[in-house]
Length: 181
Image (cartoon, rainbow, N blue to C red):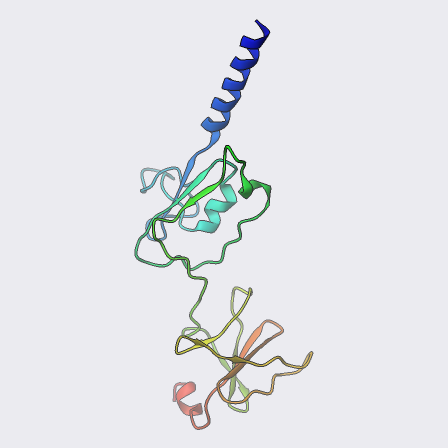
C-alpha cells in the first residue's frame, strides 16, 4: 500500500508541475505589455500576446515556454536570461521558441535631439543607458575614452560616452549639414 501511495504522489506532483507550465506568446506588432501573453493573437479585454520578450521573461518561470512571433520586424530590445527563474530544471526547462525572429539591440539616433557642444562636436542623452556602440555606415565608429570629468576631445567621426551623454564629432566642413542648415 505504501508503494502505491508514493507512486500516486509522484504522478500527482509531476502532473501538477507540468500543469503550471504555460506558453507565453510575444508579438511585437500585435502585442501589448499590459497583457499576460496567454493567447497568440489579441482577443477580448486583456487577452493576447505580450509586445516584448523582456515582459515575457519577467512573468516566465521554470517549465514555461516563450513563443516569439516572427513578424518580419526585429525585436528592438536588450534582454537578460539569468537566475533560477530562467534556468528551469532538467525536467522543466524554460524554453524560448524564436520562430526565426530577429532580436536587435540597436536603436537609431537619427531622430535623437542633438545639441552643439562646440568644436564640431554634438551630444545627445539617450533614454536607455546600457552598453553603447555607435555605428556609421553599418560599421563600428572609433570610440575615444575621455579623461574623468572632462568633455571628450574628438577627431572627426570619433565618438565618446561620458556622464550619460554620447558625443560625436562631425567631419570638417559638415557642421552646416549636421545641424540642419
